[in-house]
Length: 264
Image (cartoon, rainbow, N blue to C red):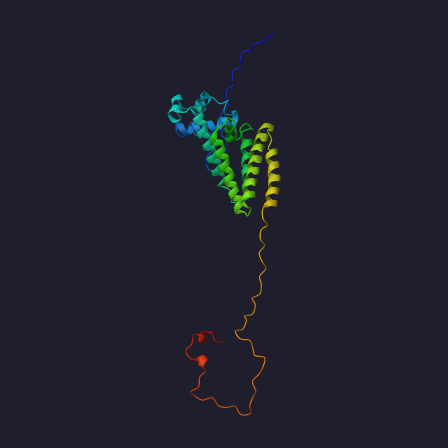
């Protein structure tokens, strides 16, 4: 006999645990000093990181952001779908801003980004993942554009480091894929080991692909200047009584020619 069970009510959301601010001054969370539109976007980013798009309802967003229901349709006439689209776009922009705070060096940027995610995951108790990944599973068109922006940013860093464009694009795609996969594994395992593993392996890969840094050449001694005219290998015959030079005589080379300035 088929038993019909009473649907279990969804557990209330735990108290909001703000993510640590990134180096741009923004965070993947809410800002109660902002207006209703910004609070709705921030709350959407925070909640879809924890619950995904489909499990995040409008009531959850309203309660989390502290806004009235009419605010959603006033600022986002398309409802939840439009709100998620704008939130995904904003999350992608914040990550690009974060990337811009790192040094323009592939290994330094990789290490800084992974360290940021390690802090992010441990601070939130491994409950929050990447909002763009959550949006991509819904799916949301803005997610693809956000990933493309991150990939292009890292590709540029690799090209400036000396890697050819095709190889740089492929490496950027691999790095982004490994990072996002490690974030999912870190959240599932409640451990930063996956992030630390990709740091080790991607660093080795990048080092193998980057051109060697040019060594500073040793200082060389300045060569002796080459004489304008080589010394003659013969000597003119000498006479016992040299003829005197007339007083008015001057060689033609000494008279107002442009070569005078080059004479030694």
